[in-house]
Length: 272
Ligand code: FES
Image (cartoon, rainbow, N blue to C red; front, side, top):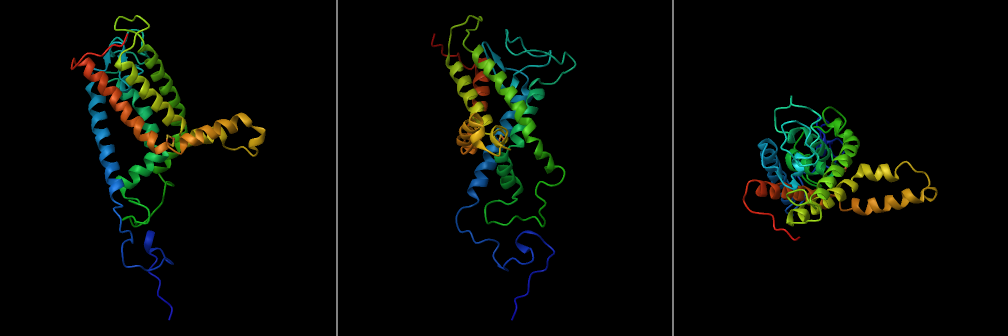
């Protein structure tokens, strides 16, 4: 006798034509661990960065500026002694200047292919893991508002390049001392350089970057330079998740380091 198909009223595992298995899923490993750890990590960063972004203080300890507050575009910034305090917005902006800048790295990370996977699994359970059905009745992917906006990721990539360039400028300025003299270095210089190295690696390993560099080509043999670049970006791209996490941690550590110096918790160890 022919087996009756489930009613075609729901999507996912209840779609017509799928095998009628009574179990919710057949995984017996701890599949929930990865989404749980991811959710805790992201929540910790969200709490920390929200506190720091609204703090509006202790973000500059000469010659170091927190990556959360650079570039400073409002007149209510502290004097950064030649740093990226360009005050283009004048004095009408009264809130924390970090809120203007963080839109760009936040938009870049929110729409990142890796972070999408991370928060779809950890917060939406859509799906929570491979071969574990999502609890939602239907599935529309990223075809409708608001998720269709994820497509603007490639534009955030261009902003991310600009932000990485400015943070590199800040890292160069970290070779000064507190009086602005060049040719000095402290532990903070290393912290800012470690951060910017990871920020660049994460930015360049972006899937959009890989497409910009090597996409839409019919013959790699006719574009040897782009082919070579595509190969390099591809090798970084394989580690995109690792770079996403390490640069997230490094940017928080760089901000925390500047905060501790600016709030007087300790003095920057100087090497020369
Ligand atoms: Fe992750 Fe572009 S895909 S930054």
